[in-house]
Length: 390
Image 1: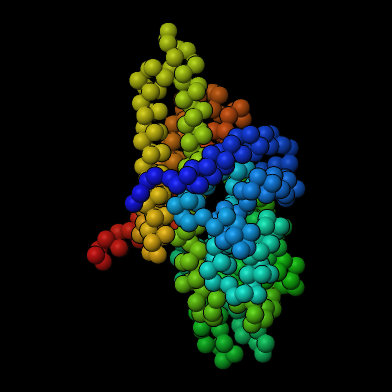
Image 2: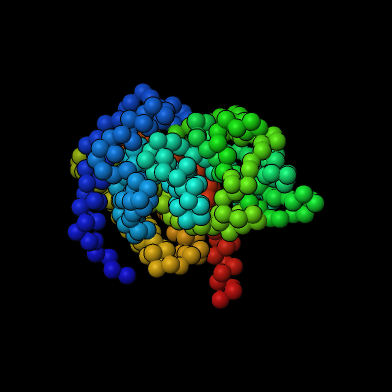
């Protein structure tokens, strides 16, 4: 693996960093944010600025309006975007849209790409991925899927409940994972369906109060009550839902790591700046071993996370499925980057628990990273299983 950057990628990295620093960070105090994330109005303003800068949708092919970066290229740019909680929103690379765009690009047919992928790539709409269900349904164990799609004469009727669906309120369309049954009642396996918001039988309900506030529209409960979908609304093929979901999940786990690496790096930078200036016991606090060692540990964690991300991205670029590599990266980064943010807050002391730095917000936001897209325990189990298989 070559760690050098092409001149084009190095220029894009610098341009993204400058855009985040000079444009995006100025919006962090914008009042168009609430406990459930930035508003759609703020998102639209940020997307327009990114489009002007030529930085919109770097992960998607140019034919759909993106920059066509490979996975390693995304690792570089997404880290820079993640330096601000609003950076991924501006570049249209925040969850769940980034992962949904990748899935559409890989699996959707030509008509579906034109209808759903193009406006997503241009930042004109948001989307939602409806997989997670309340207690008793699909979560860490997708085989517990309870939402059903029963075949009718011209399509399917979907019934069920999802929850913690990111960005559901205001999304233009939904990708819905449901267990499919034919007209005879035979189980055909899981299938992903595309459904427009506002369709009869699709209801976005309670907007849940959660710790994190970095995603537009937060996380909602979504109900399906005889939601009728036609055959052209199947994404991929009937019964291939779990297989197609893997197309999305491994890269999406990794892009979470990329964005959070940028966020944690900013927390570290703020802690370093403070440790150089704040005086205690006759010298800058960074010169005290108790503080300096925390900064050293931060740098080690940041460096190793970057290596794990780049190596997994390289495997994906070589055509590998990177299931193990993405689990390793997700497990390590979710825990190590959380440590970086925690140490940074500790170094900042009382300042760290105020809103005067990015650390408090990141501390609240990053904790969920150890849960979504597979909790640490499931990734450890998955890695152990692959080890024993040999």
